[in-house]
Image 1: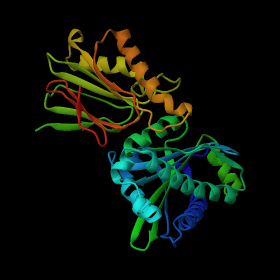
Image 2 (image 1 turned 90 degrees about the horizontal axis):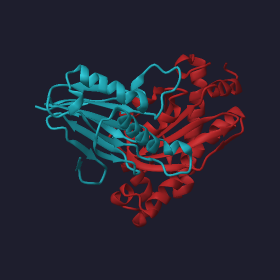
Image 3 (image 1 turned 30 degrees about the vertical axis):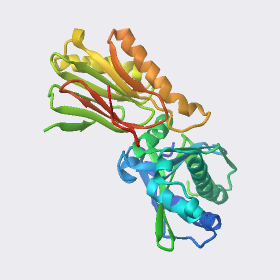
Image 4 (image 1 turned 60 degrees about the vertical axis):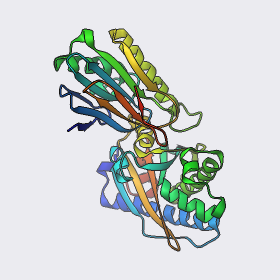
Length: 207
Length: 158
């Protein structure tokens, strides 16, 4: 069984490339969504123990938006897309202007806020997932995205529970999107189930 | 000066120093189980992930059914008297709305913890479980109170 922590440099590079393409797709999707040009900085791609993820996001009590999808088809795994509430607010303002929900509306997950955030999360996470599918040529499906607004620790713990039989590591792609003055950081995490990392590496020809 | 001690996932902490505060920040569908002897002011907390012990797993503190008796043994070892001990529990939220079974784990965790307490005959003196919000919990060993913080709400004490 191949584990994240055992990957060699060539394998990591191949995964990073998927991260780059996924981030590019996400920037394009964001541009289309807001009707303005959205640029991105070179994404940071790393393998991280899941238990360290809340710290990476700014601490276990950091207020974040989380979007969770399960992946099935040619491989099985989980996707968690996270951004801070402050950054989610920025996207809302760019997207909806004066109609954007307030911070309080987001924290209380009212209807407008949760549908707008669900949409953003859905579009961004499928951008990364389609990069994975295109690059590997694997046919992938995903579940309807589930969203939550809460403390980073609480959002990560449910995913940790689900994967605790499989892996303790996630492939994390951190992307900074830039629209004029605004900088928005998105954290995309892919957590393959047992055996699925091998399928990805095989499809990429780097086993 | 109160000392805050974080209890990580699948970990436990026990203390006989009444100044200590055992805590979990950002608790989702996991459950924090607190045991306390109010006479000797000794307490412990365990942060459980799953309801039932899985074969081949060596850490008893990960699973409700093995974590509760294991924590009881640890607080007794630290000097607590079983006849005085009561429990308070919190957590077990359903963080993501969706029909997936993944999201029912919080409820199953809370039920398994209560069952384990019942089997041991430990009275449950306070609980705040379920719902769809994450919690930060603080267990004060000076008096056994459990403070619960939820985003956008007032602090609750049980």
